[in-house]
Image (cartoon, rainbow, N blue to C red; front, side, top):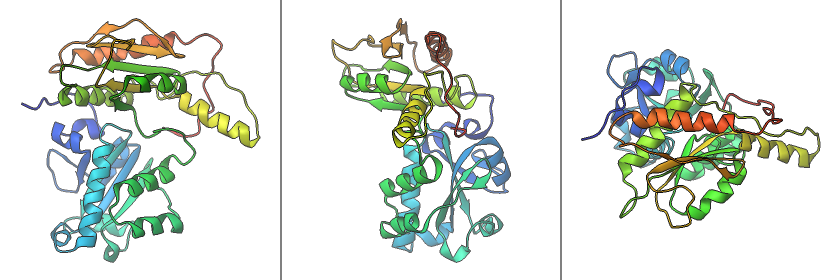
Amino acid sequence: STWKLQVASRGVLDVPWEARRSNIIRVTRQECDECSTLEDLYRDNNLVFLLFHERNLVSHHAYKGAIVAGFHEVCKDLRWSKVTCGIVDMIEDRAYAEKYIDPKTAPAHIAVQAGEPVPSKKEWIQKLLDKPGDKGTMLWHLKQQLVPEELGEALHISMEIARPDQLEPLAKKHEVLLVANLAAQGGASRASVESFRAFAQQLFLLGKVPAQVPVSQKTGASKKAGKKQQQLRQRARPLFVALTQDSSSVPVPRGQMAAFVGGKSQRAHELKAWDGVENLKLMEDVALAAISAIPAGKVLTDKVSDL
């Protein structure tokens, strides 16, 4: 049976487990378990990717169908991220769409930050038009809108990796790396990976784990200094990592979780079964212990966004 995360919260954490896995909330004035009004969606979610479409027309039009399918793929990729997706069916809630788009251009999607639509550029939109529904292009466009100056996967809270040799480069890029070795005979179970990433998202969205940690900071105005600031902002973002395959050389034993602080491995902790919520507190404790272990003398970077 599919385990449903039990939380007392708002926004994307409120909706049923299946809606969280698809990362799509139905935006409407009607009432249902996985629904939200547009106003509530904006209030409870800082970053929103919103699609306007007419459900009954999509199946009869390849171009429109491709855009809607691409939107679903992008949202699934972002399911445990900082971005919440919403869909407005203009048959039911045309007024929502008319606030932002010409209904004749539907299906159309917009990015929203802190309740305000984020502008795009003609050349970016042209790329979307050249490849309707292409997931890679849509993700690229969303990053251009929301995190144009950031290195790495700035919209993500967690990631999964299958190669243990990917850990060291990540530990060099992030001051705090939080690694769970979920490998098992035949590979990690999808349930364990999804639960780990869902918990990481919950800790982040509820403010249990900070979005930024202290790192060394040097200021400057040159182009090189600008690149350095990007690297520092990336370094300041904690990252949760699910390791799905391991080897004898992995510093985190199978079935355990450990943090890397400044590239140095901290004490590992035994993970519990993933069909309950015990690991949520364990993950929070490991993260906060890692942050408190950051050497003295490091300071927060200049905050450039709410990410």
